[in-house]
Image (cartoon, rainbow, N blue to C red; front, side, top):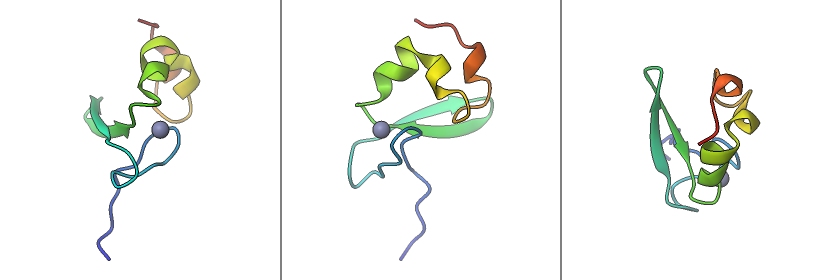
Length: 60
Ligand SMILES: [Zn+2]
């Protein structure tokens, strides 16, 4: 089986389980599912530890 590194940052769902939104950040690509997209928008500090520097992001 082909290795697939596309997983939601939060719940680790892969693209077979949920449509994943690609995020480019600091030269890296990350993926997040629609269910957790609001966390990125409203509570990016909750992604601290998952997304480097997320604790310094300002909520939208
Ligand atoms: Zn998710």
